[in-house]
Image (cartoon, rainbow, N blue to C red; front, side, top):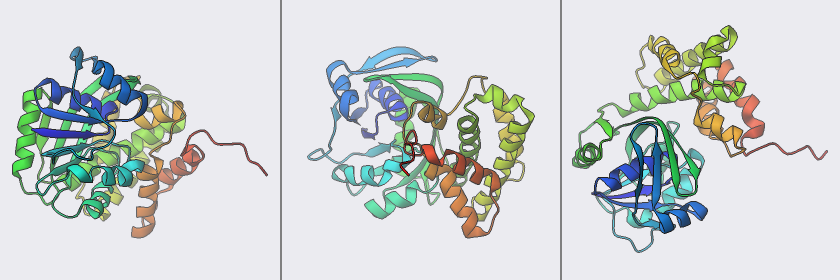
Length: 310
């Protein structure tokens, strides 16, 4: 299967490396020192689950002149969706599937506006992996994908990618209700990323302190209400299920938002908590916990805040 990985960081690098190792025709899109390292030494994965390996596959900065892909695994940060969507146009043929596995629930709509109808699928990645150094991906937890067509049909391209994942040893499944799946992840990520970043603390601390645990639960309830207003059909017991997930996480587990905040990087705050707050305003749903996270982290949205000049 001809696969282009757009965004070869922790998520794209890990899944793309597994697919390439299994013999799929994978091209990585990267930039800067990471791109140069992949070209010179291959992409190295250090996995806490399945060991360490290196794959050598084509790595490019631009896709001009390349043949159409069967599937584009779209793994960029949400704030890069529009620019990356424009960048993949050269390899999007009539039958190409574009599978975003990103945080948030509006990336699919934005990509469809750029690429036109018939290309964009829905996807969720359950994985904790980051770039340890240029050319090196560190994988610490999980490694599963759920994907499917947004209209619920089971397409040939979805079945083909499922088979590619099975050959690569990636846990994967096709869902006929991707809106609900996207919202289930969005609900949990908004609460978990918000609380770990806001408190600068891992799961073990967040769940042990009664006040932070209560805020986490209140945020989940707000997200369930928003999801149902958006038509996702979330069960009322889903917040309690998510609290059980929190209790089963490793005590040191944080989030990509926490990681980016600690590293002084740009945050996906607007796609997560900002979008939720705006949805609340649109549907007349109160979101005080989500707004508190959004307001408190907003100064760090583009990296460490600069000192006031006046």
